[in-house]
Image (tube, rainbow, N blue to C red; front, top):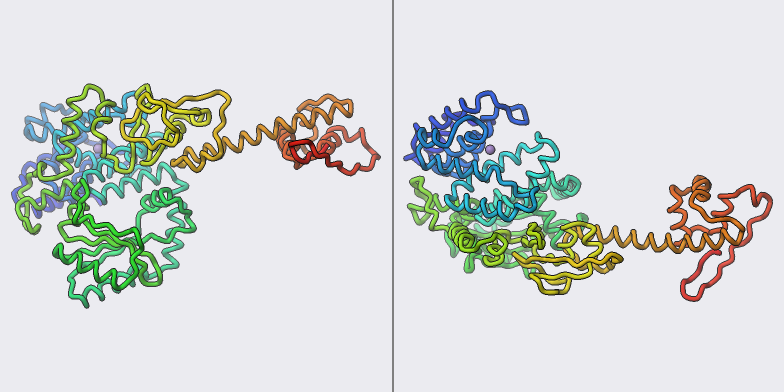
Length: 573
Ligand code: MN
């Protein structure tokens, strides 16, 4: 699917007639020659990568300088070309853009914990100097994620984590929803292969069961809208695995309960038509309570506008609906990039002149503001605290006292934080300080919080924490620790019971003695035997008999006596 030179140039000219054709051709040929016969991990010629990145950006209808930058974006890092040469051949504007990309390429945002906050600050600085640096970086990351299967597993995980933690939320915050969804979905696939496979399987099952449902709902919607004389385009789709997965986590529903997988978009001409369409929908089907949101009258911070509602539609299937105008749709899908499309023409149909009017976009204004705050403060932690960082709308960023960045889902508390730092910290956690003050462990964490976990040596987590923790990691660790603690307790009890039983028979209790009897007891380890005795599943007499079968050859087995001990219930003696 490699894009050819003339195809790329013609594509750019189709939406930007004033594009510098010679510049694009020069960048294409230069990058192709500079990368020479370098190969990607897949074995494909390296040049296919910058070319695909340029094609992604051309799909987003970005200007000639951005496309040229995309073609040249790996040149300084991966070839002998210098910044000076780029400046001389392509001008300072493109030189600066390529330089910005080279700088952020080296930032390690995942593995070097101590440097995260500082590197994050550098990233924001680089992308805020010109939003096109971010757009090229995101397209670069998208192509790398699409081809991630060719990388080594360890590298794959790091890139996927960075994408999930940093670049996908950044794309979302800049208003590019399709990009956010695709990045998240690729990252999810490599970070949680079992979860991904489970959702994909379930989707396939539902798809088979609901054959033709999307078309049925689409045509039902169209018919009703036509009757009401609302001109609209209706498009249904299945939600992406990661979107489904994160909703399951948020609402704590199981895969078996999952049915809500279809989303429909109604795109109309005028704002007033959005409300007319809404009236049609709500008078045709039942609206699900609590799901109606009007982001037209109050847009989101990244300029997103739409009406959201969920109805119980044909065949009793829940369907999520987004109702918006063509223009709102462009802003929702292309965010900061879309503002270029509408610069010259308020009704959104004219071609643009290729200059990105950064200042017109709320998202970009937000980014600038963030960086201004950053330049005023003198350390990155303080900066995050001050700005109440809203980049990651679904995440909070907190710090350990040593400055390590811990990203958690919104709503997380210090218990989640403790387990995110280390399972042992979670298991021994007894309290916490937030920003230096002792706080309850159930306090919801906020961006920039510095969290100090207080631990105690003897502590095992109370099983009730399973319901308090928000993250899956914390919950499963608590479940495991609770199980281990119970097992240890039964072990202690089993050991006491066996020691007493052994000494009554004049034997000395030892694990070696038990080890010889494992096969006869159908147990795997001496510890299993001891724990089974502690749980009352195995009688101590049976253990002795299995350990010394020759001692009790002819004796008929005594009936087990059950003796009630004061406060511990029934035990075999
Ligand atoms: Mn690249």
